[in-house]
Image 1 (cartoon, rainbow, N blue to C red):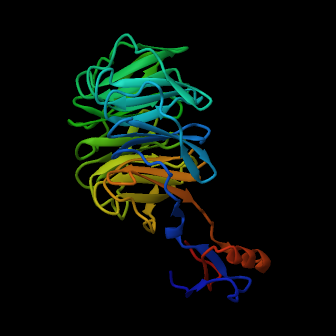
Image 2: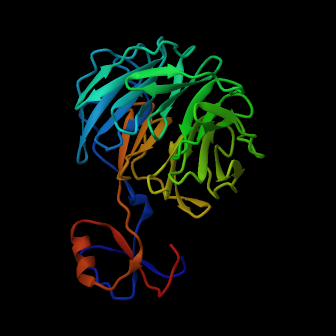
Image 3: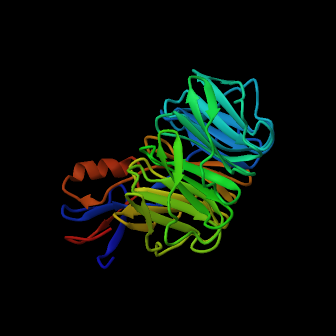
Length: 379
């Protein structure tokens, strides 16, 4: 940035023709912790499709904590009558918000709740259960399928939903090669990605009705165990968080082919865990196991540029990150109290100053901006 930059506040003289922009480190601002925190290290987190609920899987009973949101306040709901039977890991809402799936440590390994207003009632277990501890779960965009990643072979279990009943489908012909940690459907429901702990570390299936067929591996594979995977909202990108540098691998999809993009100039500084795109696809968040525990990238076409770290960081190893459906919140689950850190997203696009009244009003409301004295600049 070659042009001079000046911090401005209420009363500071600004001129038409200057560029007004917001410090990107202020884009993600930590909000006040919920009054009632999860009871242990956070392992999973998911917003409901309407953004009114946030579910957290964690260590220690009740293993799942569900919050209802009102503005920036997240209030804990009463626990479901029937709790998961062990440590809660990933959780996922169905696209209509009527079901909540929780992956956990002990049999039945996956617990599915049906929501009625603020009440979550456990459904009967499916007839065929996953074979061991479940670490990840994901609903398809139409809500007809529930995929579960787990400890023992077949490592991925896919169920089809009919009303309140979830029935296991036949296993894919080609299975993941090791422990399944995370699964994610593409936005059109045509692809299912599974992260696991044995090479190729990432297995991608294409769906044809109830049949899931493994695609050829990407030419360039992740470097080690995949703990997180996420499709962009347009389905054109697949981000994978994994052990061993570069910790984050991003693929661009062309038909059935996933080609690795060049690494971001600034990489996460620890083993990658979960990753998530914002609903508009402009941001990519990844949590990892070294401070600052989170890295947030801004996307410009095929380029991902790391933003300044939030001022207030998670307090421990990041496990899951999740954007709210409206993109206004980013929730991070992590080790160490408060176990959940929630940021509000305050995006201000840089623009030429041509209305001083609006600028002064913004400043008087406590917003922190800067001006750049230039006719043109790339931010």
